[in-house]
Amino acid sequence: MRIFKQGNWNKKIKNVCPICKTQKKGEVVLIGISGKQKGNNCEALQVHLDCLNLWIDLKRKIIYQSIRS
Ligand SMILES: [Zn+2]
Image (cartoon, rainbow, N blue to C red; front, side, top):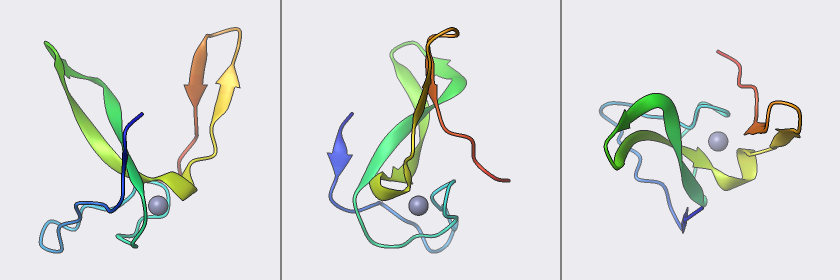
């Protein structure tokens, strides 16, 4: 997972981290959106590294984090 020193936040379109819902400063990672793959490319969201609190489901073989809407 590539870590970016700062997010590429856009004040006009108001893209925000899906977990904290802010554009706060700090390291971010790109998380691919399930179902948005096209060939080798995938639509992704920026997520603050310090907002991640991941879990692993060994039965379903997935790593995940629930997010509030
Ligand atoms: Zn965040």
